[in-house]
Length: 505
Image (tube, rainbow, N blue to C red; front, top):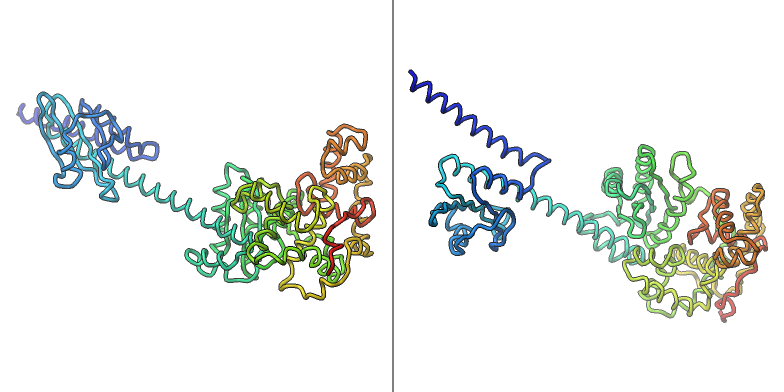
């Protein structure tokens, strides 16, 4: 009777010990664990010895080095032996092959201790090897998933950059492999969603879900708070816009700017419009705004005269090969919308390349792009050229239209007077400061010298004018150029000298 009780007590102790180490081993698979190095260290402590994990090449992955025979390790790695147990002097060894997703990634778990391995110790090694294999598989799967995500993100960015330089043929070819039909439409809207930079990956994933895979979603390379969404198709564009508005409404601290509808080749223009609308969205109750929701000066100009003037001004670029011309136009357009660094990131080139292309365009056009009034005029010409569905008729370019002629229309003058008239409600002379700041090329120090005030005062006045005019002024781009055109239209600034206007038709 006593013997049976002793046996039962021993079994209970054995079972209790088995349950304890099994629970400890399972803990290594919980989300808080899952560290191969900790598992190997736990095994070494549990068996009272030394343990290590070797990769397929015999290099140490985890644990402490255990002196092993190279041929024996090779046999286990090659699968000629699934496991091995041996004694070397006073040391007892056990080796177990750890399978991984690929044969070349197989490894060996090796344990050494001064006493022989009993059934319990041997089982510990075998079960631990299975856990290590699971962890390696999970790590490899997660790594493969991250590599796939990075590759997909890089592919989306490459497609966007092709669209930015008007290479729609290549963009469609690249997109067809993973997203068939995505860019089959001729038109698209561009949206920019702004959120906190630390949550941008989640925001991009939300944008993908919201648009249901019907839009190109890209992490903006120029601004780490922005996600760019290109929504092709007439129906898809509106559907994506509604979904993104709902997303922004449900996420405090996020904003949405959207462009007008454009041809795919005008993605760069759409992007600039979306960023411009984003500035208005920050003052909007629902945190969203569309570029087409306000009047723009080019719409108040005689379209025939505007096209004729733009064609004549940009004619020197027509002599370039088609690809070079498109590249130069796209780079210059982005270079006028953003800084050289931002434009370079968007296009995937160096900032020196952006500057070199812009300098070449500057030389061909005979235009000094360091002056804000010149930049505004060239920006107007580039956007007008890009808005034409087909190449302008030659007769349009033969009309002798000069820049001041475009600014003389009553509709444009009325718009400009209303816009700048908003500034008079402020007791400070915001309009005078803004005029001097534009004349100084957007340089606060030079404007301060002209006005006899401190440079900080100039910056404060310009910043104060932004919400009144609902346009970004301290950042280069469309908003800034619209305000420049308004000053030119009312006569507060002299029209710039544009070399292309004096060129024979």
